[in-house]
Image 1 (spheres, rainbow, N blue to C red):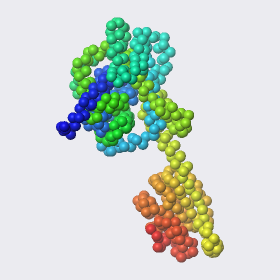
Image 2 (cartoon, one colour):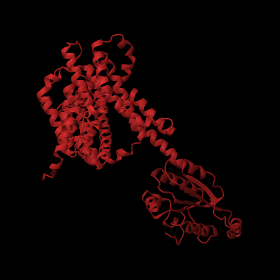
Image 3 (cartoon, one colour):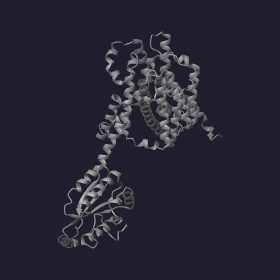
Image 4 (cartoon, rainbow, N blue to C red):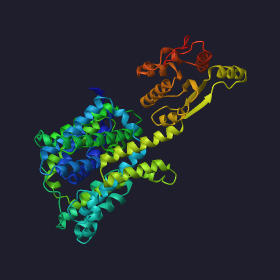
Length: 551
């Protein structure tokens, strides 16, 4: 039976998947809220708002969305950047959601898959290590710190001020989340077991440890941002950083969902749904988030098959907020820190790490650089550096596959006598430059070197018939070379495909070459070059004009 295009045969699976995902999401939402510095309630608000709106408007039917590790780390940077100014933070989160809507509306979602895997791997490894480092102090019963470097530098001091009750709770939590058998975790998620056990022990034992603190049992009133124009640059920068990160995070999870369900997601719609959810979350004072891989997998494994599972996940969290908010205030911070350690360990990319000895060194270099910049400098800078480094390495590899060779045309025996006679009479020759492989900015230097010794040449043939593509850098470089050759009274003929000719003409090559300078075959361009040499159509100006061009 179907109502509003919903097939009720999926209802049981959607209910089971949504409830299971909601149970898994609860401790993580609280932990991410605390880790961000915005408070546990912000994590819950974000999980509810984003989970609901991304499920309804997104492009991945089984995806569960909410605060995630990478998004929380960047959100924490925004919270730290504007202490005491919640309106500024709301503005950052709003811009993050709006940016995702723009990316989706511009249909740029599919481009995320072109980010090289070593960049993603280095970034995720860095995020995992950051999350672990930032939990060291809370595990020891000390206040949270704002950066991994501060955590590392302060570790010696922290070890001298250990609070044993917090350390015990944190250690117990870590033991539970790592050691509970899978058959039990499939029924009751290990983070929830750890949350309940740790909280009960702290409550019954009257432990003197830091707690989450009060959590409102109602949703907040919508709040619009209000900020000074002088802060616009910082706000937009952080907002766009969150937007790009949320895009990558969500679409990677969508790919995982596709592999499990054998369905295909709509990347652009997914970004629009994520953007709407993050904007609503910001207005309600919640954390921004993205598609959450672990929660999505749990949902699918439990039977979730449609968007209804995501809606049920958000509804469960809302019910918990409205009914159990006051009880959640007694959750120890050390317990949440232990849960986040497991999150950090799970984020690390063991797939590439297991191939360290066999993977290409260039890919490993990219991964290591991105990892280092992520942990010790900045997350978004890391992505930019990684993509740039990977692109540069690809350019070098591609350039090595391109050959630019210079050869004399008249190499056949039957043409040797005629060529010798022409050279004696005219005192100039023909040369051919053959370009094979991609013709782009990485190969222009090699090409220019080949053109540096053209003394005595009067007709130059540039053969591009074996070029699969050429970019604008190569076209401009070729134009500059043609100008120099024409200034030296060397005529230039091109052997190009029809598509290449149209591209060259659109990019202004007609200002240098007449239509008669283009040929669609090697034979035709060589015949035209011979005519120029023989004086049948001797050029009188710098632009070669050859009649009877075969195009």
